[in-house]
Image 1 (cartoon, rainbow, N blue to C red):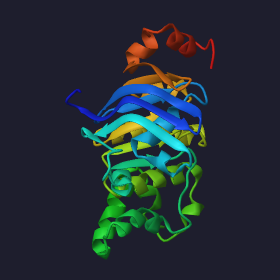
Image 2: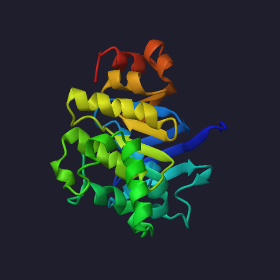
Image 3: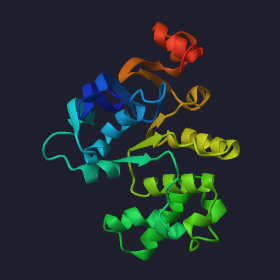
Length: 253
């Protein structure tokens, strides 16, 4: 395992009932980089990232073989706490999902759950998180307003701020721009570039141009298998696998 690896999958397979959704996935995810997962719909991209913070645990009939390690420790070992894991490995979903609360309370929610009660400390966390999510200047004068009053792009950045508020080490993003217009997408992509200075970011995207713009490493998935993984420039300019090349050049997908 490389010294900068923070997350890794080792022969990871997953079944939903009798249906095998992931097959023998092995990959290493470096810290403070953006890793993109690309591939056609239904190939297992979202299923894979949901394994990293055990989000698949909540699905009935889900069975996993192999290992997922975080800082070298298997997250599926007995005694591993999924709640603690999800604080350290946060997730931003495809569609913005702010709570029906104020902007302030959306960001303060996680710290409150984890025991922060001091108002000055909460104020500090809220401002810091909104600044990191490039949203502070847009909302600082209306923190008491409903999060539902924000635009779609602002709501997605608010959800990122909410994730950042509990000080994760990894941020998983499942198609974070698919519901956004081009201007909001550009803002989120710029934010992703800034976040990798402090966090490991893993992004699922159907948009190959987006993967090329924001990621340092890219994995191509097909039918539940990781076909190829490497530096983004290598994957896009000189893929080693013919299947990867066919997908990137638009011959299928």
